Amino acid sequence: MSTAAYSALLVAVMSIVTILLRAAPFLVFKKKAPAYVMYLGQVLPAAIIGMLVVYCLKDTEPLAAPFGAPELIAGLLVVGLHAWKRKILLSVLAGTAAYMLLTQLVF
Image 1 (cartoon, rainbow, N blue to C red):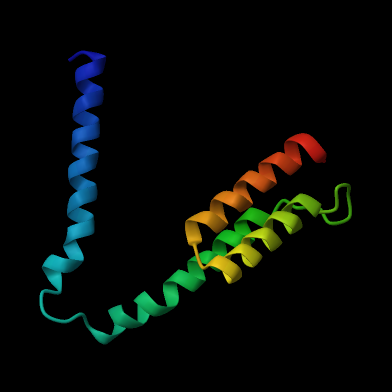
Image 2: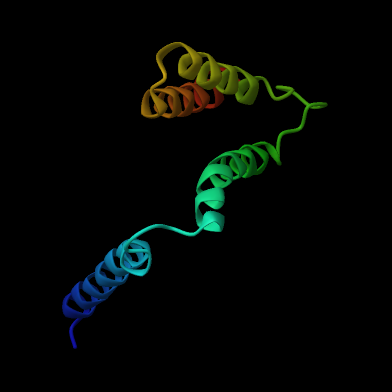
């Protein structure tokens, strides 16, 4: 099998698995989801965001230059933009761009 055919087959299989995994909850819970699934749907987004924040800040050294300034500025930008506009994509993209610009050009 050629490399291109193998790659195409790999992408096709991954696509099918992804679609099936996303459709599984709708197939399993046709009428109403159980209470624990509804509870997880309420608490997991905040827990995941918290875990991502911790993961992103784990290597920040507040006692060495630049003292976490790019992370702090970008984080405040994300929180401020989200509080102001309530647009998740705008907040995340602006924070990412600000962090990259700060680390590459300023600090």
